[in-house]
Image 1 (cartoon, rainbow, N blue to C red):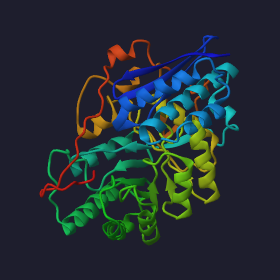
Image 2: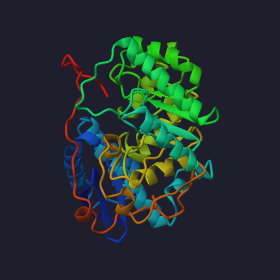
Image 3: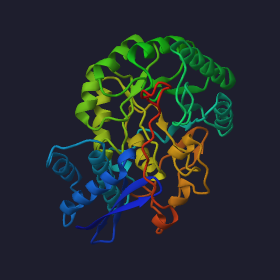
Length: 391
């Protein structure tokens, strides 16, 4: 079998890689370079020049060749490599007639526990979405922001004290409403400096969150280690780093308790499996990051099936145009589930493992026409004094 063509598909908020072979088998992957989709698309095209004419079964060799040919990395390039890797695994699974998780050592579980995305510009909206998720059978609520999902065009004005007290009050309201058996996965969106993150963790500890996600910016592993060492709430991070070496440094510093590897950014299925092994050696579990389309979700499920150290998985709703639009409060008649031939369904907070060959999902034939591509626009929130507010 030989690769005959590598194409880029731009649709909705996503960039996809489609690899074709001379035996009619095709593979599909998605890039997770959310803010830099066009750059990632260009990298996929560059990788395609090398891949054309090659044997798609030699996945690890192709991964190493593309990763090391120039040693330039970053989100756009690693997103492209991830999309290529997922597409190659998709081809291999289809060629052998098995889901990818069978090729990764077989399943460690029969179904995957997931958490619902909770959003809201007000605490009332958050509470409404919490009730809806509980009614739908979820036992974990994630992407739950103690600072709310306020629009980026509204300057942030809370004082330090008000910010912490309001966050405590909101999380307390959620905990009281959903009871003690539901896991709360709190998303801080890199909002705080280390000292503030430590102070906030002390206030929220009483509500037993499963973890605090990205309390500070991801640039300094030593600073994240400081927060992790002083917080009695587990710290989850990693969605914005790209390779096994960075995750090794993160874990060696004891800078997190849950690894938030993004399968569409960290090198695809190949990269994520290696990161899972490194995390396992540190007694650390994965909470895979996934704000993307059902294509990414199906690829993520292959990983979740095959690794032992899975804690829970992120599940973006397929009933909105995109996760970004959901949290920005944008409404449209387009749904991510309509981009693909089917979506995995959630029952009692779990998703059954895909059984179809490959990653088990396909884009509809005319997806680029029905879902015109809309790249992410730069919109950074400011404080009332004009300084940057991470959100």
